[in-house]
Structures are given as structure tokens and as C-alpha cells.
Image (cartoon, rainbow, N blue to C red):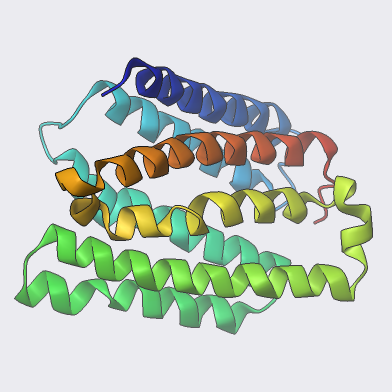
Length: 217
């Protein structure tokens, strides 16, 4: 792996740390506001990423197993909650999307027992549902003219970050094993670079949402 990839990985971890630190600082200002959970989410993400940055396995679980069945699902469910339940005020939509997403684990875990299959199906479903929520959020912002006050709109920063990172990197992770073949090495390298850069930007946008965004209850 090129040295600049290692540097970018550390930059990404640094961006996650900054987001977690700012989230922690704002937590005490938001303790009576649902945005406190966003602070907790960012702190959890940093701890999770730092742990697996220095380790490839633990006594109880392998890194890939952890992300497939806990790390990634928690991120998607939290974002569904933030978008559907809180921002869009559509509780039933949150429950429906969460059920659909979690249901994708059941048949493949029971009958196939393959992490790569579970991860691929789950990732595709989760990303499509998240894209749906991103579109709804943009429509809501335009409808309410919130887009004109984007500097004060906390969800605007989050929406842009999630769009470029989660949605933009979907093909990379969906076809990860396929792209590892020698003939697609250049595509893999470009997409991995894109992942590192856009994910770092996403966490900086999350940080900006605390600093410039209004924390509506």
C-alpha cells in the first residue's frame, strides 16, 4: 500500500477525532436536545475506528465480522433515525426502513453463512434506503426555503457529507472483492483514495454542523 494511503488513513482518523471532540464539547450544550445523540454517535465512531485502526481482531470477534454485524448496521440505523424520525418527523418511515434493512441479514446469515454475501446485500439495501432519505431531506429543505439558510442548517452539512461518502463510495464497497483483481487495480486505488478523502470531508462537515448549524430541538 502506498505511503500516502497510510497518511490519508491517519488524516481520516484525525477528522473523526475532531468531530468527536467538538461533539463532546457541544454535548453539554445539547443535553436537553436530541442532537446530543449525534455527539454520542461521533464519539462512538471515533472509539470504534481507533480501536480497529490499531488492531485487526480482538479476543471475541474479527474486524470484518464486527463491521458486518455491528459497526456498519449501527451507523445506518442511527442515520435512519436522524433523518426519518427526527428531521423529517416520519416515525413510521423510520421503523419501516429499519425493519427492511435489518431483515436483509436474516436469510443469508441462516442459510449461507457468508460474511461477504451478507455485507453486499445489506450494504446495497442500506445505501438505497439512505439515498431515499437524502432526497427527501433535500426536498424538505427546498420546500421550506431552509436551503437559502444553509449556513445555519445543521442537516445541510450532514446531508452533503453523507451523500458524498456513503452514497459515493457504495460501488467501491459493493464490488470490493471484484475490484481487487489485478486488472482493476487502478480503479481500486482511485476509489480507495476517493473513500479516504470524502469520508474525511464528511466528518469535517459533521464538525461544521455543530459550529455553524442551529441546534433545533
